[in-house]
Image (cartoon, rainbow, N blue to C red; front, side, top):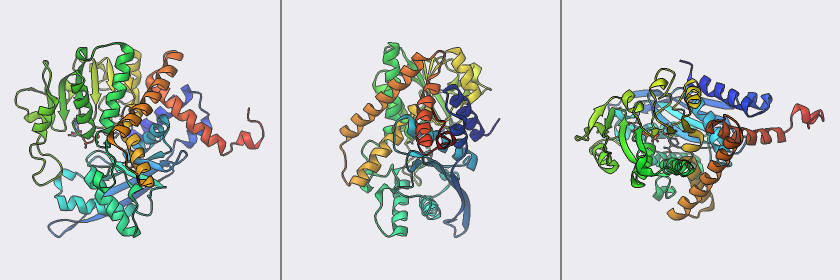
Length: 430
Ligand code: NAD
């Protein structure tokens, strides 16, 4: 299996070529600008010190300061962080944000830490990165196994180091610490909205759409909840521990209450699982992905669908809420088979769009209402979806992913060319 960054880069090259982007531009986007690696010392509750490998990648700042989440997970590596930062670069360009792409992470299983160890780890990350990031350089946010509280600790640590208030250094903060209303739900809401745009183009009723959701965290829960409330039939849900299925439909709020049962015990990570929802049949992770559904929503980690299991996939539509849930090779097979895929760079962009709103509110010192946030989010996504849809329908045999990359890359190409190319300086540019 190729590395996730290798896969992301190969996809960039092939989609760039398909979209007619100049080779010089693709070459310049094929490598990260810089990645900082650090070993974070953390004082554990038993008095020992443990070290955790941590990363922050600033992939591209062509369109503005770098932007991207911080992940706490045992699979985090420099390779993964760089792939995620490349996708952030594309994503911010797809939805016209004045941001480049970045990403960070710590190789840790945060579920094994106490609350105080988690706080010390979060502050240690910020101490290591404080000179690298900043409100006009690189702005982190939450990702897998990080949350608003962790963003609040990190903001606080940054301000202790810099000795002045800088709320815009990080987004996804608690609302009472400078966060934005609507940020918590934003990734799920964005994914819901783009699925709704697709549904209205295809003229289907929500009740006729059976859905399987892989991953039931911030993004997975919020998209499942909105789809459920809109009348879609959620027949399967999974988390890291397993999956449940009910052909008659699951009640998303009930599943959530099972999962949340132990949340407040001694950690910010719930110990319960969706599998504790007693009334439903347990199935395996692979069985969930292979269900006969109209819509599959992968909302966990990269490479859920690869060449190994792609032939089992029966879903007609896939909304990619996770980053990179389908490998490049599997993607080609699904496209050839006619599966409609709303690509991650648009489907999960609600999070970074509302992070941008939070950054704007912090800089202006003027908070917006929830209504205003939701209305603006919908407007940005509608415009981006329609552009992608139109491009796809004007070009033969093009996927929505190719259409999204074509828009993002042509935007980046214009900016890179504006700085001056060989052809410009030789006066041969047409
Ligand atoms: P989270 O930590 O809130 O939740 C992750 C969920 O995935 C948990 O329910 C966990 O149990 C589950 N999970 C982990 N491994 C699994 C597996 N093998 N099978 C099934 N479930 C599994 O994380 P999140 O913020 O919801 O992020 C999920 C995905 O969405 C990631 O790919 C992330 O990069 C992407 N994303 C998140 C945001 C955001 O704002 N949070 C924004 C854009 C993209």
